[in-house]
Length: 46
Image (cartoon, rainbow, N blue to C red):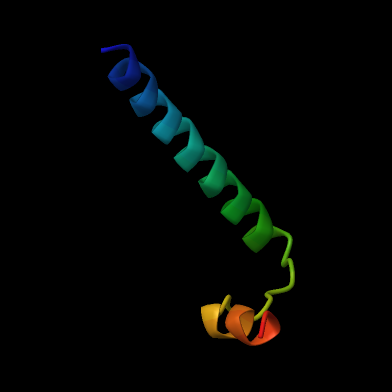
């Protein structure tokens, strides 16, 4: 019960923080990087 009581507010707070970061980045026109690719990680470690 304690886990369920803590996970829901944690997910909500995490979602709110991600939304706030997205909003600030769009508002301040932060540069966009290329998308993450697992293939690039595999090539790096070979």
